[in-house]
Length: 160
Image (cartoon, rainbow, N blue to C red; front, side):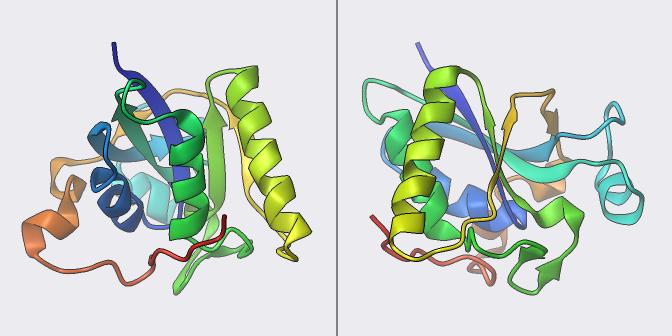
């Protein structure tokens, strides 16, 4: 039976790209989490203050990959020390956050943040309880795979 994990690390296209390549990941959707507006559109999130973050829903097979591996990947594919966005994408919708399903997931994220801070990083990643995930419009799904382009805000940096 598959499980779901939720991460926000800047523009959802790059986050989706790297999670899709992870062994054990079954599907990744781009969408929005954390705000008040029901069924927000991309325009709502970008041009009004809905409180949503661009996020991804990662469906994975826990027999093949565990949550900690996914969380480590999350911290290695974006800059968790940037507090106002990600790379050139500045704004509230691009903040670094994890939406946890359980206390166990929260403990894993807190442990990884502690490891990164012991290495000298000042981590700005927020931890929120899982809220409603709203799938983004179809043209956002698998953007880099459809266009043949590569992420410009995200790259993998080994941190663990």
